[in-house]
Image (cartoon, chains in turn yellow, purple):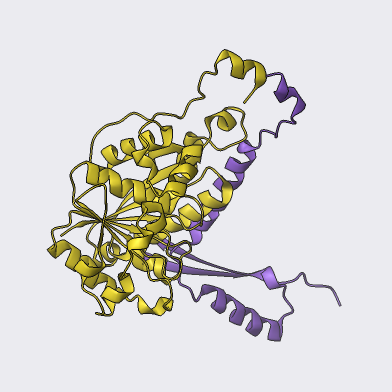
Length: 270
Length: 86
């Protein structure tokens, strides 16, 4: 069986798809066979972030409804041989996704020898989000240092503890990881933004990583290249650290302190 | 801080306020988490019944579910209005 990781948040726009894409690429870089699935039926976006939007022929719902085989629908990444994308359906109604259908696809991926399946959850706590988390072994809860995101993530942590197959079967809890994104150390230092420690204290759970707010994230999505592949960017390096931690290695947190400014920046600001 | 920064107005240091508000709301929401969905409905219906006999406020009925070493206790409290001497 593949290890199933759900990337979820409750609130929209916090970086779920960006994180799903980078974590999937990072796992593939570590030599794992990985599938990343877009659960956002009707609002397909993972394909754009992964840069394979023009190669989508069949989607997740096609496989669920038996109109295409898993092999036909899986889009092989152009950069890593062991990485595949399963796109969300763009047009069908949300009821097309069923628990049995999702289970069939996940079982199929396990049979095909996939080691990790990354489930990119839609925002909200409706059916799509529920199905994305239901079969998960691990959860990455993406949170921004901002009040509504922190509150919503606590709600999601509660759902992960009760509304998953593991919880229902008493198979031991899903492992929960908190991923703090859009972090701005300068604003934290100025007392304008919740700190890593604040968020950890409020939610009672340690972070698995902190992704600094970075212009490289937009550049990466513009180009369809997951930001983890931008090895010079702090955000990319931070995602690489997260992947290592998910694979059980120790990595100290980086990019959570204010960078020392050069002379020109000190004079002119910036 | 650079020279140009003096021209910009600094936002206030509001992270502490955010943290305090979150601490309270998260604790409150955790305490009601896992409670059955019927509780709000039950509360409303009870309120209607009580109002047939006593004119109580909307927030006079308080329902909570507590878990205590394997037992679940449904606690119901109704604040009756003060008795006005006739």
